[in-house]
Length: 149
Image 1 (cartoon, rainbow, N blue to C red):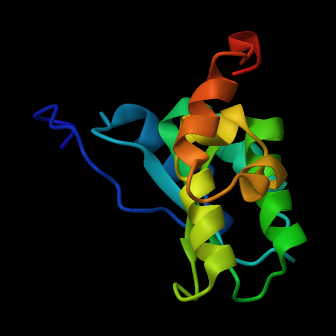
Image 2: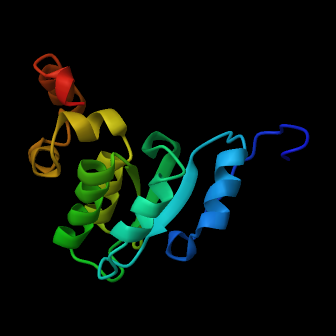
């Protein structure tokens, strides 16, 4: 891939095992899409590993899958989602463990839409009525301070 300059789409790297050799390789490759990592276990602190990855890759080139509802409660799910953005500016992509759970489907719908997540908090999103959610988001968007996004 390096010799012909072909862009690659990495389906995922295990950030827990990330090292300098992989970092150098990531820098040399052309990337077609985001580099995907995962944070499945909320009891595991990945800050050091993510910071190490960021020595080689810009945060805008990383997407972190966040498994919710398996080993975690709502507070732990939200902590990971907000922590990734607030500390590292890395987008989270929520993967619900139980797709029949209204909570898990809802938080995935909220989080996996970048603009919605930056317009309203999860608490605000939950409080919007189902029938008029789209219109309420449009109305809120008119008042949004874009300097925060």
